[in-house]
Image 1 (cartoon, helix red, strand yellow):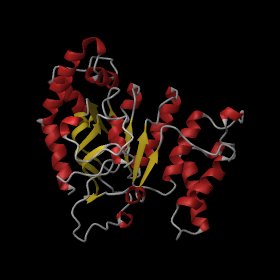
Image 2 (cartoon, one colour):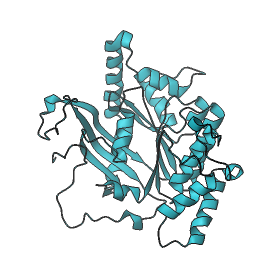
Image 3 (tube, one colour):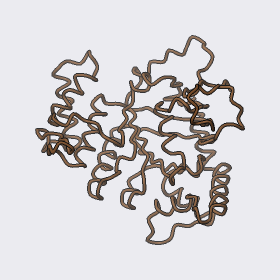
Length: 342
């Protein structure tokens, strides 16, 4: 494999067919795949000089290790794991928002076509950040109209853009607050609630009707009711054919059941990828059956966490589960699906 520039996915040798126009593909039928992703961080983190791409493997920290995966239209794929598992790094790589000091190897593809820059990806995807950034002195509808005028295709008429704003407001249940200021808490300007603000972040990203939506811990900081409201909004978007990928931190059992597929990470490796029933089945086969009346999400995260008080045993458990998944039928099925998209 060709060694990539730090912070960049490797580009294939030019063959005259790299000018991929994903905009022309069906926006509601996009399959996202990632194959053999490896992410390294040079040990010399404090250096102010550019790290030489010829750094020896022994001098790099391997934080994501040979990860394969697939996200399909009409489904929510939840990426979960304990702190330090590599889930945020993986999401950053999939959205091409990686730090400049990361060395990345592997391929990210949409409908079998290699993605090599953020402009190409942004044309067909949206990204809902964990920390929302808005102009708090604007009303909700003013913000969305501004987003529509700025981001929607220039070939759309003004009427079509305003119609899309109304559609998104209704889809995400923002009608009752459309004329309310977003608000600036630091300046004492009262505005919409935390749940409404999170739904507004979703609305801002789906205004262009992207085929893929990435979400970074969309329920973080919300109460159970608001968190469920956000996940219901994601579920409705998935039903419309969107491909949704999100990182999630300790969801309730009720929210967990809403996800279609689960991607578990531990120590930078894949511990499992499949549907919820398959996850329960796989962990039981490894001697880690989910106890009755126990939140499966909490159980999986606890099982895959590295406990400071018993680090060696925790690492042995993680290695056993990841090794078993790697040779399992679940892993082979994922690999087959990834290769079908090539």
